[in-house]
Image (cartoon, rainbow, N blue to C red; front, side):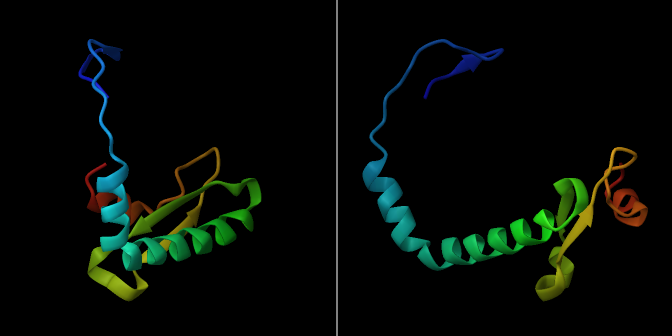
Length: 89
């Protein structure tokens, strides 16, 4: 790792992250497993979409039913207009 300016690294700093990452994995094992399951489900759905292009949106307000996958095409981003407007884009 190292600080950069416009994508050019000024100096390289080495860190041994093996122990901290192993501890983080142990502490977050349940969450990581849930994330893997969710990513596998997303991959399965997207693989069934023509062109295999999609936008995945998670609505925190809806919790259990919050993850939605929208097919994309070359004409638009695939996200319903009401959601796009909600975020001010």
